[in-house]
Amino acid sequence: MLSRYREPLLVAAQNLHSRLYTMVEHDVLAAHLHCGDPELEHYARDYTIYVLAEYLCWAEIVRRDMRFLDLGSDEGNREFVRLLEINQLALSNEDFPSSLRLFRGQQRAIGELMMIPTGNPASAQYESLGYVQFCARLEEDSGFAKWFARLRGGLDQVANTPAERSRIVTLQNGLIDLIEFLDPQQLRLPARLRDRLIPAEKQAPNANTNFD
Image (cartoon, rainbow, N blue to C red; front, side, top):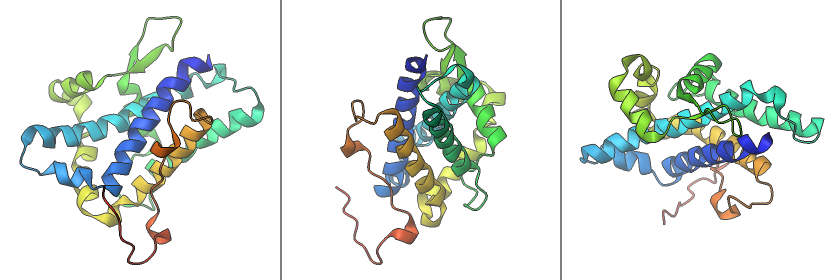
C-alpha cells in the first residue's frame, strides 16, 4: 500500500521544493514573470501554481487513505503525519505575509479539485491532474480557475518583494524534511538536489550569493 503513495508524493514534493528553491535562490520567477515573452510569462505563473496544487493533491490523497498506511511502526506513522502537518501549517500560517497563503480548508479543496480517479485497483484510487489538463481547466472552467486566481496574482509580490518569501523558505525546508523521510537512502533524489533555503534571520549580514 505504501508503494502506491511514496513515489508520487516524493515526486510532487521534489517538484515543489525545486521550484521554490529556484524562485528564491536564483530569482527565476522574477526573471520570467515580466520578461516580454507572453508564453514564458504564462508558463512561469501557471507552472508554479501547478506544482503547489500537485503537492496538495497528493497530500490530500494520502490523508484520505491514511488509515490504510503502515510505515512499520507507530513512531514512523506519527512522524509521517507530523511532516505533512508541518507543510500544511507553513501554507496556512498567518504570521507570514498573505501571498500564497492557503488555509487548511482551501488546501484540501485544491487537493480535491486536482484529483482524478485512476480506475486501477493496483494503484492509488486517485492521481493528480497533469499540467496540460491543469492549464486547460484554468482556461475553460471558471469554477476551477477561481480557486487559483489569488495565488496566481500573489506571485508578483513574491517575485519582487524579498520580505514576502518567508513562507516559501519555511515550506521548502519542510518539503526537504519530507523528502528525507520518504527517501532516506537518497536512491531517488541525490543529496546535491536537497539544498535548503536559509531563513533571512539566519543569513550572514552582507553575504554574497553566487548565482551559477
